[in-house]
Image (cartoon, rainbow, N blue to C red; front, side, top):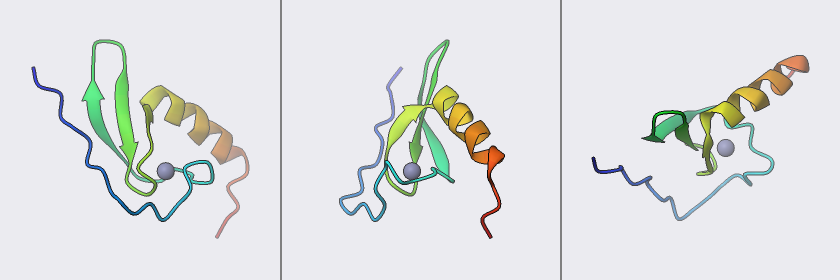
Length: 64
Ligand SMILES: [Zn+2]
């Protein structure tokens, strides 16, 4: 099995620390974990982390 390499975008327009990661793409996966890359900032993290973030985000989602 060949792990697909995440595309590296040279220009990150958004700071990962500020990014809400609204759009992610799965870049790697194993039995227990799924790794996703944010299309906005290029950050890579476990999808389970994203769920935690999403839940916290939901609490105060009165943007727009
Ligand atoms: Zn992001």
